[in-house]
Length: 337
Image 1 (cartoon, helix red, strand yellow):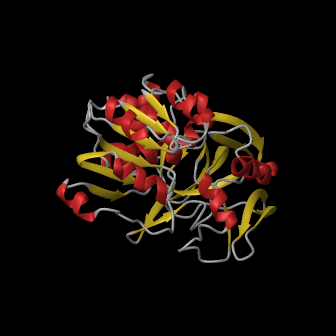
Image 2 (cartoon, helix red, strand yellow; image 1 turned 90 degrees about the vertical axis):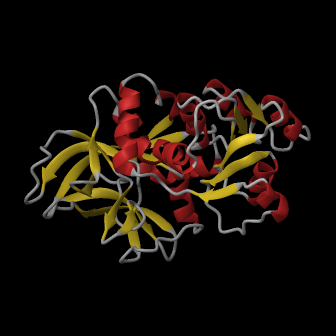
């Protein structure tokens, strides 16, 4: 039986190891993809550090990686829509019996030489888009896209705020610019992140510790406040601050994940202003991925600046460490099998 390298997480001990495992074979309705690029996400860090735990994983070990691009290597019985050699991007999850399973969490992902996918859980990657940019779209880009266009339903000329301008937040700024939001306010304690947000299209970038933050957002919005605020940090203090600068009927969209309680300090004010708090997770892949690939292909979006470095698969642990320690303030690191 053919072997391949994979970065496997033993969940009970939170141990990441590079292992030789059997190369998978595609079953009916499946394709085998030769992985060309796989993104390293903060969710992967949280799986390793124990903040996140797979809910639907059948065993105790999983190959990480939910941002994956590559080429079709083999097709399983009954698959007619794909042929070997086609360039593809894999969805970050699959719906099985009505339940969403996340790739690299609930089943084996793309930190490996090959990855399996259901034939309807991937999309063709245009020749003009490099594998590294293609790989990061199914989370680092599609999650904020879903938060902005679906959950947050941002309209042109609406004032918006983005708290946390890291891997997802910096893309949110780009995407908000693309849909015509104005002004766009980025809030992040890291000066590098603030500079990056301004370079990607934010109109204003503020330190959350700035005592004049509320006044500055008020001035930028003509006193109205923000129509929509996005929390990409998953921090209770961020949520409280965002609520404090929300306009009447404004919505706070929770994208960053946390197990901490959500508190509304003044419930009467919140209800009187008819504000909303909306939870967001992932994106509708069959809708979001083709939209985003079309926008990249058409020159409306460019994520080349989001690739902060590439490492071979064997150095997966180093990539995780770099992301966790924020060494060099990476947006996305890519593993190349």
